[in-house]
Length: 374
Ligand code: MG
Image 1 (tube, rainbow, N blue to C red):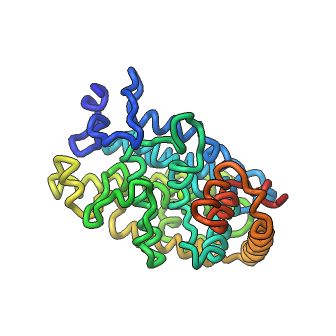
Image 2 (cartoon, rainbow, N blue to C red; image 1 turned 90 degrees about the horizontal axis):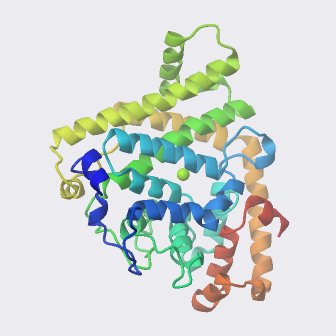
Image 3 (cartoon, rainbow, N blue to C red; image 1 turned 135 degrees about the vertical axis):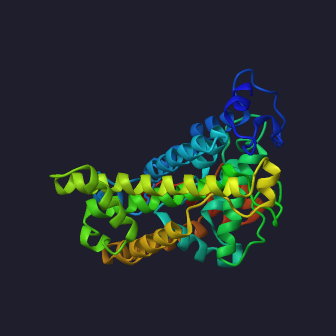
């Protein structure tokens, strides 16, 4: 803890202020609470399964593009860079970033949307909520309790994501944690929690553009519609000449990430100064402080829209979505006729919450490859 007081700003979250865990545990002699959370997340099976879950593109479409696991690691990398530059609690940020997508079912957002449809009258399905179910209930790793017994702050960070995404679907009141609602609705979350959101945005816009270029879903000419891309290209031209097309593209992606991270760092720094933020309490009273400048926020939106139109709605991707929907419907139907095949944690869910939720929990725990074989 001495380490934190030497390197963290006064508005960072300090480990000694943790509200602890649902099942109290003794303090570890040399690992802080958020370090232990990070390790528990890395060692849980839901985390390992991310390696065989897709991000945007099918596994067999190439050997270049991201999986859900490498996406998660890129988010963590960006988040830690920002946390270190802003003198925040890196361990907490790392735990939150590693956790953020753990609840994703197989086959990305199509998988999630289809499960949400299938559970429409049963509370729906949301990958951010599912992450909490996994780490609070479904993971069985310790003899004393179900779940990973993470700290209140790590669960709070994930709950914040879940409430944000449920609000976008007009159902913010669904309780998502075994603690009930952790976050007081009028308050902003800690800066460490705010970082994960922006890091996720930076990681997926840049790597989806990169993967789409590599796999031929997008051309460099089409990307000219993005101001951020044009700015990245300017940077490349300033530093290099005579690059091959591939070298040029990759250099531009690196510049793109650097431009976005630098803008967020500088904009956040000036907001912290402007509001004279001195403590975590100040952070909770103020609007969200971590984020890009208005100009770059607009440019990020522009790039996201371009990716949506050209990549996420590419005919090959749309065809894949149809296929995935069919698989989900068939598999769900099959399980509804055979709920006795649900064992272990899913059996307990079946008895407590009904077959729809138990099947959704089971499906969410499948990798893409395993799910296709069901
Ligand atoms: Mg993500």
